[in-house]
Length: 136
Ligand code: MN
Image (cartoon, rainbow, N blue to C red; front, side, top):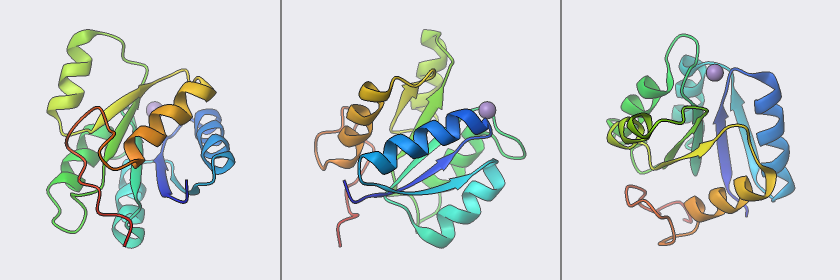
């Protein structure tokens, strides 16, 4: 995977683990520790994928996905929620909010990379919202 992945996560341990796993899989990583900084990086760098925690300082994950999915320059970028929320209603809310999918915390390394690969591979995402336009 040569993708550029932005990880927005305020928990340093989770951030470090996800960044490490992504780099091990060949991705370039960009990081931000709050939603506001994440949106700045997203606008400046136009990553191939955004991984976004839900509970974040300044702008939460729902705010991040709302901003990205309504920005014509950014809305083709899949945004994947990273969440410890486990209730079915939470998952529905996440998908309704415009996320392309979610991965569960705590991060399971092997499963995490498989899930990320699915979001980055054109056509193989289990959710539909992502338009794969990132290769050019
Ligand atoms: Mn958090």
